Image 1 (cartoon, rainbow, N blue to C red):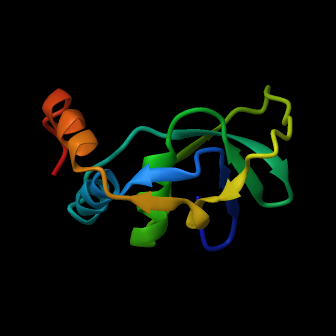
Image 2: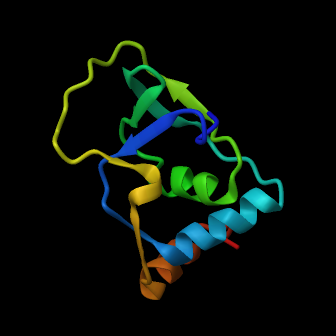
Length: 108
């Protein structure tokens, strides 16, 4: 998904800046990531179903298309918490990043 031509919404208002930075480095190095599950909510508008907010924000920042998997069986239900991926706030939480890195050595 080209995040410049389609609008992607998420439900998580804040994401870890260190995790995002690591993912951007991976994107720039050519790493591949699993598809982000999405549902259609309007004309060229989609919403992340469950997981993938960090990946989506990293691809948005890197300017690289995001691999998505459209779930056409889902019925969109507005929760009132949706926000554009580019509007998600980045917070600095080094301890949270270190914990992720200890569980998964793929973090850069």
